[in-house]
Length: 125
Image 1 (cartoon, helix red, strand yellow):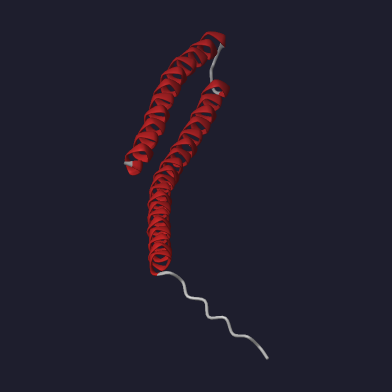
Image 2 (cartoon, rainbow, N blue to C red):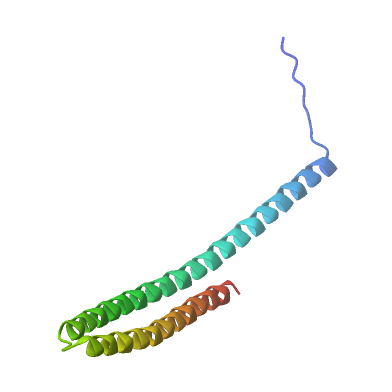
């Protein structure tokens, strides 16, 4: 004959268990909410960085095209120079102009990179 044992959980232990489960659920919900918030902030920063890097890429390509065109123009002018003094003058003008252009391009790229960093930081807030 099987002997049946009836086991009853005391009311205070049952209440304690329910309270512990509820606290664990709230802690988990808080964790999930924070994880979603972090993911959203990261996505915002990533989007800002993507946009900024695309802008940098486009500017760099435009500058490269401009510089190559300038070099071809310089080569054309150099080939058509009538004498050595004109060749020296053409080269001198090219170097002077190109140094100014490169300085301006570097400034623009630096500003774009800084703006990208600022935008990424803003999307974090």
